[in-house]
Every structure is written in structure tokens, then in C-alpha cells.
Length: 389
Image (cartoon, rainbow, N blue to C red):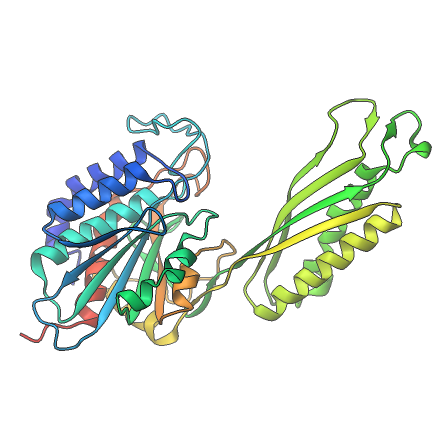
């Protein structure tokens, strides 16, 4: 089965929804305009079972099939939040909210699930229930976890759950997936190195925190190169290095380092934290500095269940040929992982074509991918909940 004809007919409408969402990016849980737009669209499709306010601005909508002899429920999830980035695309539908931008394609994900919702509400060609999950705060807020903690799976009796994410540098509308770990655990660290400030012309009378910080940054790279099996992935990135002074002739009293650790394996995750804490502590001590380390476990590894990966790939192959069933893991994190920890399911990547990658001020979701994404969501429901008459 190619792209469903209905999505060819509604492509222009869904594109308009996506571009409207692009103009009103909102952050984390604070999504009043986005959530209102989504809820209003769902009501316009004739969907009446709509719950708002889960995880503050999340929405859950239920579509009943023509029959429900199976008693089963499939969950479909899209994320709605944007990023604190100033848009540089110059598009006619660019962000109207300064310092905020849909730079990860969540506007596209939301529009795709709305398109699928419209189709499923019109046809209801399945036996069971489809639960549509519009989630806030994927970008650092852990909205997926909050929805789970507020009883998402139990309240709506979800049996399986599926989601998608756009994939730059992959052919537009084509799919990629893998069984097992697909996206990484995303942990964060915050390190404060304390020494003794002083005059830059007399470093021997100070304890140089900049020197200690520089050696810490270099030493942390030994975790990947010398502590972890080279066939297993780990990323340690120091993303911020900031002192308590901005002077040309003052050695700072403190330096703060912030960054992230990404892993695909629980054992490697533990090892990376252990080695980071030891390396930072002892390297700083070698330069007579003390340290304070805060290490926070973030999103867990996104793990696709084997059977559900097969189901998702089969549905994708009905939409477009040439599905990549063994795409390499990606070291980005994703809080859909919390939902997959609760129920079997799968997360699939949807090609976004050439252009700037996600989290870039020039990024833009490719609207040509919309029909394939909508078709895949619809196909997942109709395949996993086949109609009985």
C-alpha cells in the first residue's frame, strides 16, 4: 500500500497546520497556544473523548474503532514543545515568539498525528481503540515521564505505544528503525572547581582554576578512549566552561563546567559516571583545587521491543519501499523512552531530506514527509487492530 489517498488530499491542510504551529513555538510545559490549537483541531474532527491538562498541557484523545471485540488499545505519541533558539530561517511562517523556535520538528510530529487523527476519526476502520498522545516538554522537561507518572498507560489501558521522529540527511518520507537501543540515555553533569583567585601577573600566589578546568576537560575524553570498550558507544561532552570573572588580569576563584554523558548500555552508563567523578576529583586535586560535582541521570535509553520493531517496519514498508531495519543508534536522547519502559512498542525515524540538522537555527521540518508519517500512524492502528467486519 502506498501513501493513503486521503493524506494526498489533506496534505495542504496538514502543511498549513504545521506552519501555523511553527509560528507559535512554546517551551517545555508552557504550551497554551499549541495545546489549544491541537484540542480545537481534534474537536473539529468529531472526536469527543479528549482529556486536557495531563502533564499540565498534554492532551490525550481516544478514537473508537467501528468495533471493539479485541479490547485492545494502541497508543500513538507526538511531542509538541519547541527549543530556546532564535530562528534564522527567514521563512514567511518563521517564529513570532522571540528566542523560541521549532528547531527539532515537533511542529511536524504534531501535525502528522493530527492528520492521522482526522483520518482515523473519519474511517474508524479498526477493531479496538486508538489513543492519541500529544506530549509537552520533550526538550529537557521529561514530559513523557510526567505523563506516565500521571497514569497514562493505566488510565487509557494502552497495550502498545508507537512514535516517530524526523531524521535529517535521510531520504524524505523514507523510514529507518532498529530493534533494541535506538537513542541514548542522556545524563547531565555540573562541576564547580574552586581554587584561589589572584592577580594574573602573580599566578604563583593563586591556585589557578582555569588550569585545573582545562586539564579536566582533556582528561574526561579518556573515558571514551581508554575506559570503554571501543565497540560500545559513549559520548562525554563539556558544553559550558565559565569562570566567576570576565577580566583580562584576574585569575578566577571558581570555574563551572556543565555537560552531558550519552550511553546505550546500563553498565557503560554506570562506568561513565564513576570514571567522570573520579577523574574530575583527582585531576582537580593535582592542581590543588577542590570540586563539587552534581551528576543527574536523565532520559533512559530508548529501546525498541523486537516484535514491535518488526510490526513498525512492516507498516512502514506498506507506506514506502526500502525501510532501513538496522539503522545505527543515535546518541541523542528521547523521553519516549519512559513510555517504552512501560509498554511494548517502537520508535521510528522518518526521513527529512537534506538541510540543516535539528537544533540548528536554520532547521525546518520538510512538509513533503507529512503524508508518509500520517500513513504510518494510520497503518499501525489498522494493522495492529485489524477490522473484523
